[in-house]
Image 1 (cartoon, rainbow, N blue to C red):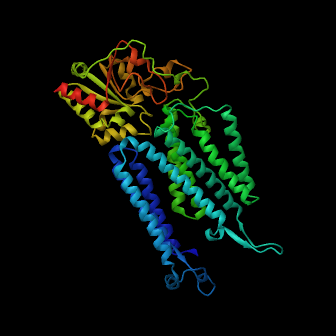
Image 2: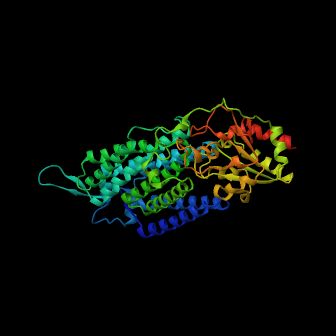
Image 3: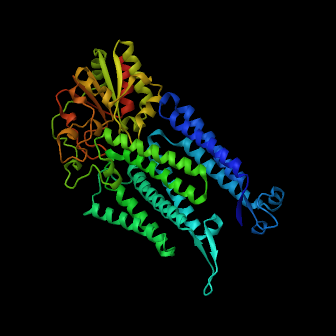
Amino acid sequence: MEHVTAGSSFAALAYLVAGVCFILALRGLSSPTSSQRGNRFGMIGMTIAVVTTLVTHVPVDQLLVTESTPAFDYTAILQRVDYLTVLELLAAIGIGAVIGLVTARRIAMTAMPQLVAAFHSLVGLAAVLVAAAAFLNPMAFGIAQLVVPMIGEPFAYIAPVSRVEMGLGVAIGAITFSGSVIAFLKLNGNMGGAPILLPGRHLINLGTLAAILLLVVHFTQDQSPWVFWTITALSFVIGFLLIIPIGGADMPVVVSMLNSYSGWAAAAMGFTLHNSAMIITGALVGSSGAILSYIMCRAMNRSFISVIAGGFGAESGGGGAGAAKTDRPWKRGSAEDAAFLMQQAEQVIIVPGYGMAVAQAQHVLREMADKLKEHGVRVKYAIHPVAGRMPGHMNVLLAEANVPYDEVFELEDINSEFAQTDVAFVIGANDVTNPAAKTDKTSPIYGMPVLDVEKAKTVLFVKRSMGGVGYAGVDNDVFYMDNTMMLLADAKKMVEEIVKSLD
């Protein structure tokens, strides 16, 4: 069987409309106020792209494609359509749609980062499978010519440009898959958040990447199976090696980077499939993910090149992986203490983190803020670029709780206000408030800009216990400062008690 493309002009126009929808989707997702509209545009664009592909790529019998029966003879096409294959395609789409719908409805917001990483891995795996299918049966993809030598068996000669597309697609897809698997394991708690540093990792990474690029170049001259499968195997390996040295505090950048990789993998496979919709979509996702990664790296004082190379923010001998120093003196407070201090304040800055997400405390936190505003307290929210486990994690949670957008501020816009703030209310945010990032050169988070909560007159720090450390495995000196009061409890329960005390 092979796929005969029908109505190419219609397909080009439909794919162009889908591409415009994807651009509008990205524009809408740039702001919480327009995010729902952006999602709708994305859904419309994807629907147009999928339906167009199904309609214009009709599975027909090979006997149809003859000089006497041209491919544009729609009557002949409909007579020879392989309806069983159509049903199989529709069944696959239906199964995927059901899985996606059930997952979206059941997944907790706290598990959204690992879900995103899992989806990235599937995109990468799809790219690998498409490249493998194109390599094993290039005639079906229209990227090869049948060569009948005078001596030996006939073989399919793959065009060199298609080999470049195939080699890059399988390499990027394999890196995306294996890297996303490691990111999922770290985000899901199956692997520790501390960096896993291999001896000579930079040389190993550079050597492996160089070998992959040389093999891709060699693949343009030699389409032997060993070349293709070696590229695939090395790409799977380098995906693991690039992500395991990255610490937990930097995982939001990793998620953004893998998002970019998945886009470029899709674009490469779009060239192989001669599908302009995949090329447009992949390029949009790849470029937007790369831009976001660059912006986040600048915000975190990280090198964009070192992100691509892997292992950024992690140096051998880092001293930040130790346990919490619970033998140091610290002060414990109660919900009543916290309510009294915040009632007397002129301004309270709330700093949400992953602990808030785990406890799903965003709704009761907004209720607490509303109570404080009733008492005449000015309330603001301070968001760190890497708070949570993926870009915009805290913004999504606060938007879900209907927190007014004009009360939410990014680090660079609010950091200078802590010195004039009465109370900094930190709820489950450890690494992004740790002053060790500014002073301890041995710390794995050194150089990362942090929220200066310690400069507030009083710091109320909500944490489950003093025995744990942040995702990066670093103890926080703020816990032991004279102006800090520790509120040890589940975040949601503690805020609920504070709300009762405010009443």
